[in-house]
Image (cartoon, rainbow, N blue to C red):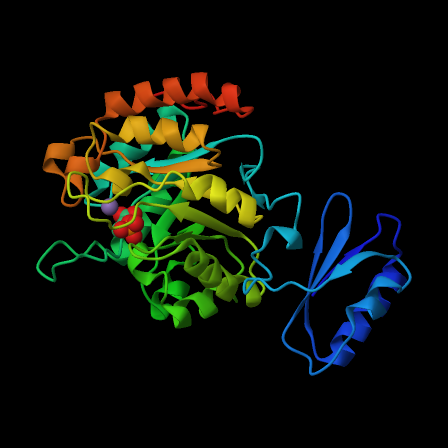
Length: 345
Ligand code: PEP
Ligand code: MN
């Protein structure tokens, strides 16, 4: 059930509604937006009448929701979620935010150069995997803790926030001091134990769509994190597996406007994993922004031909720079903007 309070509702009225919901057996999630407070009742009380809530003092609207994802649904926060970072960067606001960097952290030199190039292009986040989910156990598995330390160091020196993938529960605490966003990869979208644990963390999470996951399954996975009380959640479309083999995956651009309609959570596009070929990444990046994405997660490498993972889909630094300029020109057409670089090499 969703109970939307009136703009003029007092704290006392809000508390009375919460008390009644709890009495009935609901787990209550509260969100206070710019205009009103919305209360989401999760759980299945044996019996209740939604009309009872419609007439309580201070209530604007109360309705049952049949959607299986109650907290991820648009109705919980009609105005949309804005994820805020301590340095003032926001994801889900007017600005289209770019997260860029290599697939993996490979060395100090590589990640420092990457950070400088990423910052000089105007991105706000440096990406880089320290723990890598590789299809083959013989492929490079990442630098681990050493990689995380390098990410933090070069992020701080270039003014970039850090996003890196967490693959299992035991890595959460280890990663905490080094990352600003926990990335949950496609392969872990339905690692429900990991999702539940990330619900208890007080740090933003970016959840990628699984390679064979429906939009509803993605939203149900998001619900696991939200149900734990972590509302700083960002979704990411990164391509799905279809019968087409020309591209590595099929970038489902249509998932972006669908998600924007169904959920209040910010939605990013990852054109790199979406197509797997750097010659097509810029077109898909532009398409994602035109379709309403709140940001992009992209792979860029100072020397892609020497990359230890995903080199073929990593942009050359010049390509990335040109794409950022093109995104700055495109964004205003859809009422958005892309920041100018605040860093020069
Ligand atoms: C990555 O971002 O490098 C990655 C492994 O992505 P995905 O989980 O989408 O395959
Ligand atoms: Mn990758």
